Length: 190
Image (cartoon, rainbow, N blue to C red; front, side, top):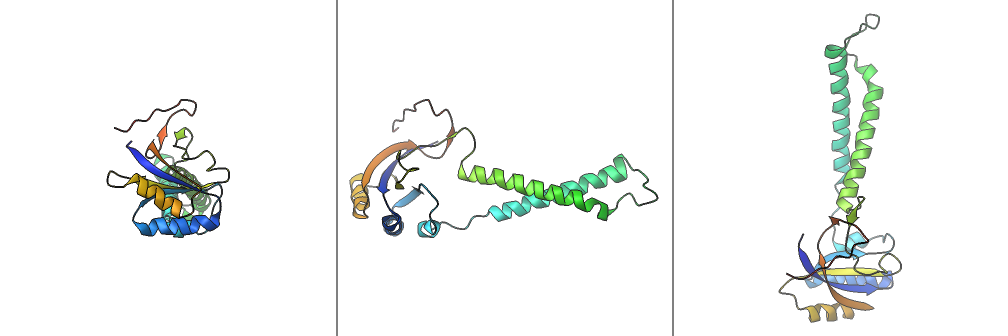
């Protein structure tokens, strides 16, 4: 994982958060993420995020469940263990419908939950950098990613101009990693 610099700004209300996110998005700074203590309706649009493709993953997982059910039942009842049920055919699609439905729902549900956890990085054992201790309490935290061409002082002044209560620069590892929460990580800029 790459160690990067981030400019962090804290806001206390949604009324100051939305205009700040809009200004950051249109200013040319790279918006890393926005952390809020509760879901904020319309923030994804303000951040310019595209709609999720989780429903496509659900369809693919459901299709996998359907083909697994039909494939295994076809193999079992025609090749592996063909049993004569009162002269009925070995391959009977109407008899397969209940199990096919159940496996379709099971594969789609479990697959979508695992995909959601992976995409949002909320699996057990995942460790992420906390940019402000009150980001899950009552502060709205906007994080900008700084590169070698970005002037830190200008970025902090820009964030203060958007109505930020607190601003600072932090060095952290980008992304998520596995680790223990009780061990303190030491980061140095390479």
